[in-house]
Length: 306
Image 1 (spheres, rainbow, N blue to C red):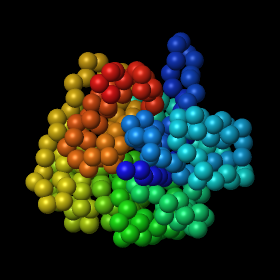
Image 2 (image 1 turned 180 degrees about the vertical axis):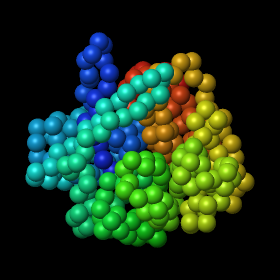
Image 3 (image 1 turned 90 degrees about the vertical axis):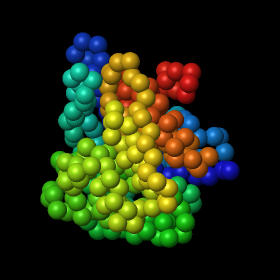
């Protein structure tokens, strides 16, 4: 069955380590990474589009060309005069990453400023995914504009997917961060949190507490990612189900572990509706991705099983 997936957020210029002291330029960002992997694994009768805003500068044009070359649609991306993409640099140590960011004039901060444009894009889609980073970069009024449209989409029967992806450095106030993340969950039918984030910032004692809290916020389906400890699924009236992580020979770069899981999960779930099968496939995808450098890994490098 054909469909349309829309991913909403910020794609940034990515600088990663290359040989010697050189840096390699790429383009990535949590929700774009998810769109990239969803496009990789969805059948051709599905379209995948990205919703953001970019500038009118040369780098923005190069970013749009890159996105199009991945097969992800750019028809919903607005260009904003006087703005440019954000930029981040990856620092790696023993396979774990940290980041430096430059995003003060990021055009993506204006992605919800045209409410009619946003509504048209959401209404044209069957699955809509956004993240806590999407919410963090927006002004409070823009957050409400976005969440209002997502609540409408959820009420209309669309699958609204939320990865809380909690990044405290993007928020000026912890209470507002937690309140806004909770509001994002209320607008969603499927929430895909990472347990270490939830334990650290919401104080969840265990995965069961994370599931209970998000169910209390109105999320019918929850996928709790716990890194090498596997994934716990709570879908509808089904009892929670556990899917172990896939074996990893050598961790090279964990930059897009959760994003690749999300994209692969949604691609498989959209086709067969089986969350357990989707989680197994997504775990295998994430395990393959983190054995390579960078957020976006070509399908040919991920192994024959994928």
